[in-house]
Figure 1 (cartoon, each protein chain N blue to C red):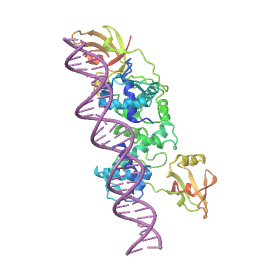
Figure 2 (figure 1 turned 180 degrees about the vertical axis):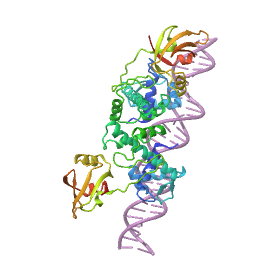
Figure 3 (figure 1 turned 60 degrees about the horizontal axis):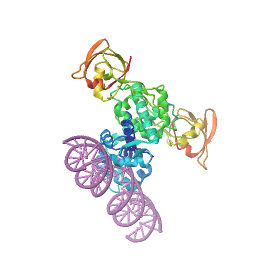
Length: 218
Length: 218
DNA sequence: ATATAAATTTAGGTTAGTCTAAAAATAGTT
DNA sequence: AACTATTTTTAGACTAACCTAAATTTATAT
């Protein structure tokens, strides 16, 4: 049996390693889980013993195929529950993360499959993140950060990188949502801010905002 | 903060004490939770310290008003989740208990209130057990065990006492469900079995069955 | 290449929840 | 009332997950 804590470590390793990094550092895991590096070392040894992780002292960690499957399952559950909360229970996208952190550990294959069916097999969660399928496979889309768009190009908002409540509320306030069409009007060199047009209104956004919004070009 | 384990102990004390017993024995809690009496003693001391239980050595345990509120909340969540699984996710009444045992510990007031709304404020779970309201109040109905019915009296099935999968499947097989009208045709003295009529068919049931079916007389 | 800084691991200790075995209290029986 | 059986509690020990502080390894900079 796998414990709740083990699942959380595996999920962290998975998510930290998601953008190419072959191996994940002890410190980054500790930071992500708000725990201490020494605790991470302990757990990572255990995960390696159980066959979920590859680990050599001082060399970082990666997941075995078995570990990856577990991680993808947890992520799948997390995102399906988020979709459920928004679609069926009137939650907003800034309210769902913490509850999904709890729900993602519920063990029942039928439950998650029925949830999937009830929601009509969604491919993305309310933040635009893809939902892994039953096999753990994710079909990745060619999205880029708004920050990478050149002047006078357009994009459609397809996701957020920062899913913190404060950022999501900022977006709500300015009527920026998944599906919004955004045009980059101009870029400011000195502070990397940019002026965008959205809903026929021009507004200035900071580099931070532009670096946390995913868009699909064109 | 209250831990998952503490919640489970409190729920057990609540449910064991539900039929009148002023105080619940250490052994009965141990049996209900499949643990050892010595572990129960430890936990019960802690619950008393935290103000959730009344406890004097060798004298059994009861819940304080605070403890009762916690227990009723957990039971409310358990039964609402069971109703949800059956109503919205195509589960049968014999499949829901174990999953609800997990879901009952999810912490989110909004979640449970929205679930309540989605289900249109159900008063009973799929086994006929009443769902406590937000204040922890349960309106109890005047149900009795089928075993207590005299010959030639009728009752409507309104609940089950044993919620084990095997018993529920037995009922399914013989087309006995909540709402079924049952007539006691005759009673057998020597083994306490009885013959009942249901769906225009006569069948014999054992004492065990009659002692685990709740009916509303008349 | 060596010194220093940063990251990681080890060593030893804490807490929650559990267990077994032994001791103490209560209940039941003659 | 005294003996026995049952129930409950205590004592001491275990595991999972965590911590701090010290030691070790790797990385960085002169």
